[in-house]
Image: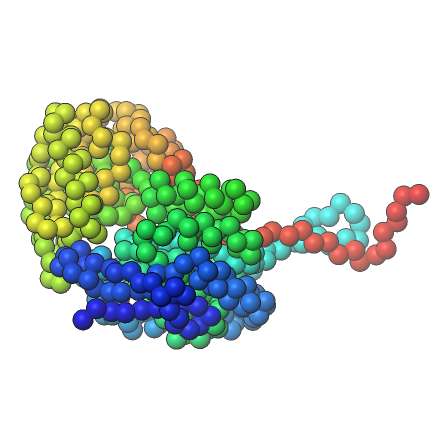
Length: 486
């Protein structure tokens, strides 16, 4: 029996005005898992109407009252972990471990938002004029348009709304068409049940074929004052261009082409374990996934042998099995893309060290390639699937140059037992995030998360997320009458 949901506008579930619906197909069973309302542009306008109407009261509500709501939402999310896991398995084929991580981090995102609501905002400024007090204040912007992707739906659905709401804004959320329940409506349910007032968060689901006009209508609405988007670089360019056209700030967290660098003094067994996780968690469908493992040539043979053996042994198959690591990709198009990237690389001279082979439905074997030439599409393209490459270097400077040989700049990992050496190498890497003696996949709700170059701009997390969704105002108070010239 399929799940059926409507739009979420002004605290109520409402059908799309034209009566249209869209199906969500389970990537593992290939049968319909859910049916959701497919919004039209008039529904987007209704959602913005509700958000705008709610902004006045929400923006001035006591921060302690807001904090209570978000603290309760965190507890509710933890309580509903099983429901979240079922939704993620049905919509995107997520494994049990990935769902558990999503719930844990999603709940902590709400807790960090709760803490931010009562944290100090602003500064007392030195004023040139005697008897004047200067202030820098941060205030909410208005309605925020939020776009959440499917691959980490609880985490990224929570992140899409938490900081904007904590800053005092209201939100219209457009979740991914592949996971409208887990990265949209489920998040709204949790916040509603925690006491979030009607209209503060609204969710519009849609048919994939109608995504462009939905996004354009939402961003172009003059009452929408800021945009946040997490997703692919290609779509991010479109969203960023629309926001710029309407002079609206945007936070864009986009794709990555991330490297794990294994230095010659690394603990090889630890490095293998770290690289396997970094490359193949959630079947490689993470913006932070390690597409490239760069290994010092003196330890490359040992590392590659052990790494390939570990990857070949990863449990693969149904997301319902508790130990599955490599589950189905989100759809058949994603499987075809990975197969084509591997075939293209091999045709151009790459060697399959592990995996390859024929997919089983939407489950593609975890694959390791060596000797991938620069003219292979995979060399520069984000894979976003269960495939990574291994390459070698001779000096730290060469490792940095290889890691930087990409248009992206999201994250990197450096594996070494010498932290001083790692810090020197870190300074050469052009990424928004670096993890020393660790791999590339990590997220904490109080840390500044984001990249630069084609990986986007702006930061989520902690005070940086609050700053991204507030206006800074300069206010002065004269404690004595000013003497004006003339």
